[in-house]
Length: 110
Image (cartoon, rainbow, N blue to C red; front, top):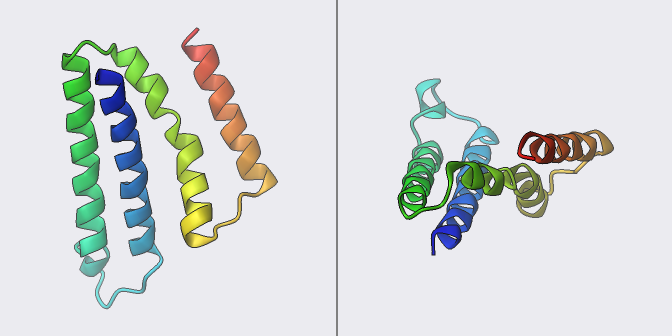
């Protein structure tokens, strides 16, 4: 059950990043509306929910190291979600960067 919570947390984090990206794509009337709007508050709210779910999973016995490994999948999921939702291209440079991050995660946690 704990691992399912971590995966749900990772997916919530992806949604929160898409909400923050949506806010960044819009023009805002005032400087403070860039930071205080539905997309930003909702995105950061979901980040807090994601954090709480991870803490619950750790409390249930999932190792913090395992949570970190699963959460690193977001480096792959977020660009894929941005490509699907916003039609943001995944360039060769971005794909290479994602690959380097994934290799780094594997090497770090061996």
